[in-house]
Amino acid sequence: MKNNFLLRLSLTKGIGAFGKHRVYQFAKRHQRWHFDGLEIRLLAQTTKSNNWNELKDDFLHEINSTHHYITIEDEEYPETLRHVPTPPLVIFYKGNIKLLKRDMLAVVGAREATKYGYQVLEELMPELTKRGFVIVSGLAKGIDSFAHQFAISNQGKTIGVVGTGLDICYPKSSGNLQIEMSQQHLVLSEYPNGTSPAKFHFPMRNRIIAGLSSGVLVVEAKKRSGSLITAQQALDYGKDVFVVPGSILDGRSSGCHQLIQDGAICVEKAQDIFDSYDLWKKIR
Image (cartoon, rainbow, N blue to C red; front, side, top):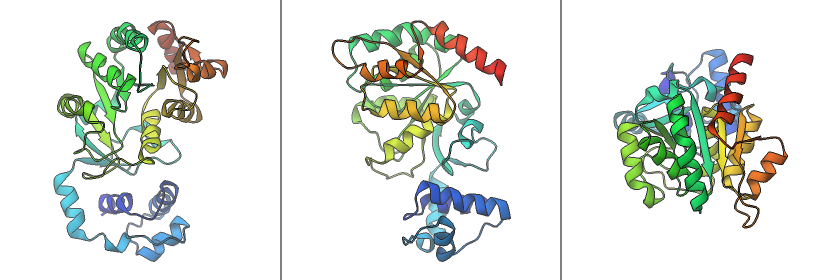
């Protein structure tokens, strides 16, 4: 009953992430897992209508039979993600769910990455994977895909978080990589199969990337970019943000330099990440 409630709530349209989390907190506090649409709307504190009552048991049964997923109530759910302001209630997955129990480092950056960004990851990734970090990114073109590919080529493990259903590869250029990761590594989404990409999905996807990871490494990012959103979310969650400085000539790393000016950790070698990570573990 509990899992079906969380699945239904996660799929309900007309309620935002904050509203869904309020409903979940009420249900958990009172150990009550059955509501009608009006109660859901009142608990979510919204005047918008929702499709709670339209999600029939047959539909939920179909989702259960065609998807692998974990809920926020499951033991497999990553503890780090529980502490973000609006954790996903349900995570759909393909691949090795046990990777969520390992130390994770997010790597994000420019879609239009340069040769320099490629070389940075080529230099850093052997040490990061040797240390045992699972590399988390968003399967986008550029730095994201480079990070996944270098993790794999260095015999490491990697997790992709996507803003679509797991049956959709977006962008198409990452299709083969996503298929390989869904078989040998792990791909996650909070959206069921058939969900197409939408602009608002990707900031939501970024909060999962930031929430999962011990820290976020930023390589080549402009001042207005999704990578900076992820970095800011990580800071808001109390995570370390590591930044590789870049050229001052073309603006591709202007966001990176802003982060460093704001107090992010400047990274010139993998040991810069390890030093901060080891100190953080001692404090905890």
